[in-house]
Each structure stands twice: as structure tokens, then as C-alpha cells.
Amino acid sequence: MSLTRDLQNKAREVGFALVGVSGSESLRGLPHGMIDNIINLRSVEEEFPSAKSVLLLGFHAWDKAFNLAVNAPGWLGYGMHDPSEQFEWYQLYYEIVKNMAWKIIHFLGKRGFESILSLRIPLKPAAVIAGLGCQGKNTLLVTPEFGPRVRLVSVLTTAELESDEPFREDLCKECDKCLIACPTKALRPYKLTINRCMTYSAESPHSPDVEDDVRTLERKLLRKPSLNSYIECTTCIDVCPIGRPSL
Image (cartoon, rainbow, N blue to C red):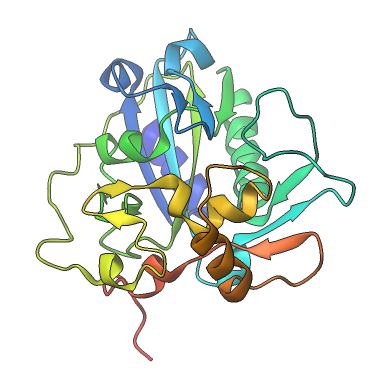
């Protein structure tokens, strides 16, 4: 079997539900830099200049508990998006996908290839180029198999792999369920007003750009298992009919 096929099999063996491959050149020109004061995205060449291929790996987040986020107990900052802040913060699905991705890196290392994992490249548009799905009206990656119930990580490698075809279909079509269901009306088709998102509000408890009505709804609607933790809002995910299991 080819290395690409071996990798696909290994990725599914360690728990990834979706595997897509793109050549690094195909990902040039994707948006990067500081996005909405949330994250400083990096290009593939900034992350790993010697990368020849990029694996986009999708974890099926079948339970809301995967969206658990935990802050350090002493965190009294002005919002997680201030680049000068230092604090501990854990998100369950990131911890899971990073652990699984290291197994892929080890697999490639045994075959003589250098690789790194990255959550800092533009994962959603990269996943579209790697054939996993489309970016939906809720701005998330929407896949035919699982809808938006997927969390992503990438592995950048010096291995030359066979690329997948980009995903070209708009799976949302005329559906507006996510736009209608959003409690704070943060969504317009294919766009998110970030400071009206309840998850952003929870991540930025002292940020002045979050409006009072959003704060009120966040405190009322977000599940908070403990003083320092919360489960991200999944309303737009829950209502998406694509890939939703039958009850």
C-alpha cells in the first residue's frame, strides 16, 4: 500500500473519523494573521517551512461534553484574547485531538519523516481544500458524514502524500436553521459577529466589546459544571440536520 493509504488507516485506527490530505502549496494564500482578536493564525510555511503535505484530521465530537473548557482558578484577566496575558486554559476536544495527532507524528517519524501538529493554520478552509466538507452558514466545517460535529487538527509533514480533491458542494443549500436558532443572533449566512457569540463571551469575561444582552444570555444558557469551567454553546451545531443521528 502507499504511504498515504497507510496513514489514512493509521489515522482511523487511533480514532480520527475523517482524514484529508493537501499539498502545502495548495494552502498558500489562506487567510492568516490576527483574526477577530481571537487567534493569530499562521500560514503553513510559517509553521513548518519544510512541509510538503498537510494532513487534516477530523474527530467526531458526538457528545456536548467534548466542548468543555476549563480556566485556571486564579485567572482574573481581561479576556483570553489579550496577547500579553498568560494563563492556563484547557479545552477537552483539543487535548484529545492533540494526543491522537502525536501518534500520527510518531508513525511518520518511524518512516523517516519530520512532522509537527498544528492548531494554528486556518483549519476550516484547509479542510475544505483537503476534501472533508464545506464551511457552512454557521462558519464551521460541515461534513457529509457528521455535519458540523467535527473538531480538527492538522499534521504538517515532510512526506510527499497524494492530495485529495477539494470539496466543492455547499451542503447548507437553502437551510437557515442555525441562523434562526442562534440565541444572540450572532450569525449571518457564512459570517459570525464574534462579540455576539456566547462562547466568546465566556472566553472573555471582562472584555468590553461584549454587549450586555449577550452576557445575560451567556450566564443563563451556558452550562457551567464548575466555577472555572463551561461547555461551549453548540446551538448551531445541534440544529444542523446534516449528519445528525436519528433519535
